[in-house]
Length: 371
Figure 1: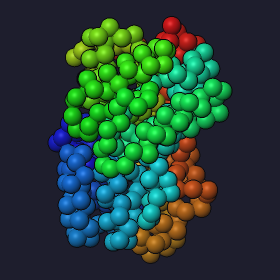
Figure 2 (figure 1 turned 90 degrees about the horizontal axis):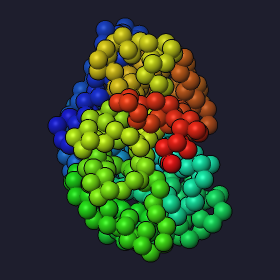
Figure 3 (figure 1 turned 90 degrees about the vertical axis):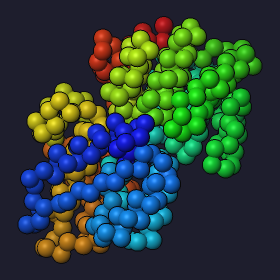
Figure 4 (figure 1 turned 30 degrees about the horizontal axis):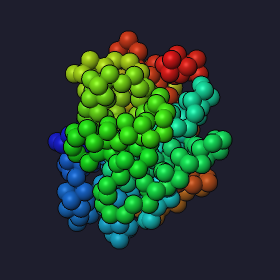
């Protein structure tokens, strides 16, 4: 996971949450050692780190951060027979994906659809929904979500064809700007100008202003884009998926003086929830509690519970996967269901930044923001 790179807040948050969940806990007489290596959100480093951990004989790989990094680690894990559990990504390549993959979280398609559904209900037309995304598998997972959300909306056919054209471009990072209502940026960079100009070109071509910009990227890069657009005087509303990291994004946006018109979807319960799992996380993490570290905490607790439910003391990868598949779990009041697929939760909560905190976004709140 990224512990030292530009997305380090995400890796550090997941690590803190998982370690807090496992600290002092034993299951069937065993404690769990959680070993992490830094990959700086760089697939090349992910490959070498994954190989090293496999050679060290890890039981499972848990909590990896990122889609482009998962894309290169999953084939290695499949070959070695190592399960992938609770990765911090909602990309389709893990749903179901190849190998033994167990997801906790909702997908990016579900997250993106949640925001677009609210926007459409608030009166937006398809051409007013734009996107700014990372130019890789992660960003394209977000575009797939936009397409899915618009597929049943009247008058969206032309937009969907543009999105299909953008997603069909091959290669690792093809040129995707100036094709449709989408701007892209290169992973691990802050170069937002080209993506911004792509959205302005769309406005000129379509004759319609972007009302909401769905962003799918890392928090520093997304904050840089929003700051640049704000400097240009744009009155756009922005949404971000959970991977962006709400708290990290808020901190980064403060440097640009931006503190409103920001929506972030979450895949864990609210941080002030009365659910026992959230209460436990608040106690264990203290000031380090965030939406990201809470997800790590949930993933850690889930692994403990899954091992606990293995019949007898035959703790193997096969017995762990057999215990999870086809079953449901109550993790401190949070329900995870693996009876139909390899994704335990469909929870998506939309929040918006107001008065330096993220509040739950209702339909009336969306209408107010879009005004």
